[in-house]
Length: 473
Image (tube, rainbow, N blue to C red; front, side, top):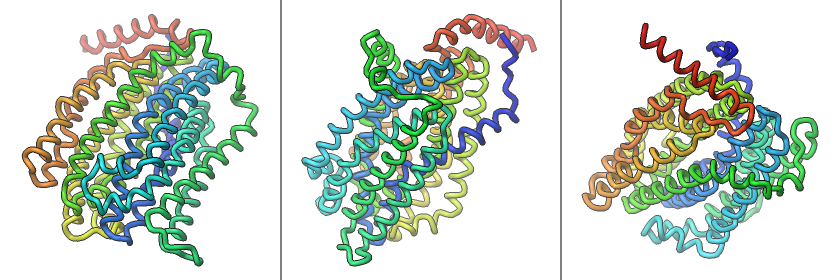
């Protein structure tokens, strides 16, 4: 095996050229609902709580389709490393079809019966009354959301990081301007409140997809999408795709269900607690949106190395990302804690909700750092071709530790809100122990390309020799 030692200098060069643009693009593309929550703050705690509940529905939707997108990213990155253009077309077509089906299901439900969906999450009639018009309009944006995501994933995987970044900037600007006009009724427009924020989200989604399509059509040098190849699944490709995707799909689906159960507990707390949680989710979302972009970037880098047969390079990149990303999360959370008052004041919260928010950020300083470490390792497992271990570990820990503990604290014991909140992340430390061991073992590297598979025996031998040497020393 050639010398594939990755220095920190080389690693940071990759971070700055590939990872940071992807992180910023992801940060911008996932902030629409966060912008809505912030800008609706002047309408009072009830509006903030309503938009926050609607964001939880969107999060469940995300969990249901992200498995297909993540599976697509696995194939995109490894096939890009092997320069398999037909395989990329097949993966894109199948992922897009599955994701659109999920978006039409959720979008149709949100448009047809928003009151029923909101009623699952909260028993507060006044919050449902404000949230129903918002989620009905946002339901039309769901198909746009999945189209934008899969195109962005394709471009990231083929190292075209600037177009998604540019489209996300334009979409965010559009969302901000329309929110400012429609929420508050500027320039003679009606004062629409939360519904105005939803219109801004819908139009910004249209802008995002339109700009991405322009870049996709104009670029003929990297990967050319062909409808014939996108629909050619008859050669057994769909079986291989689903074999890799199903564990991820179940992971995201069950995670979404677990979070829904937790959100139901939160939705039955006081109105101040619900509003504080909505504000916290926005701040957490800003942190996690940036971090998730780094995770996607790590998937691209690791997947490309594994797909091209440079397995030891992929292994080393994984370990370095697993150290870097939690460090960044801790730093951002610490800054958020120090600036908690000006940040939380953006949401128009009352004194009690401000108190809740401050200590939620303090709890997340530790919990969020561990959570992002687990997340980055699981993403790299998937990029390396292994989707089962991380899935089983996350689902088992979530449903045996975090969900029952939070449910008991909030719905049975009726503990104070901050005590309930502290149970949300109780499973993360257990996962960290097992995932650290699995990462070091290298068992997660399972290539889907021929060149990657041919390099696997040599990689295993090199890893065994390295571990033996470490024990001797």
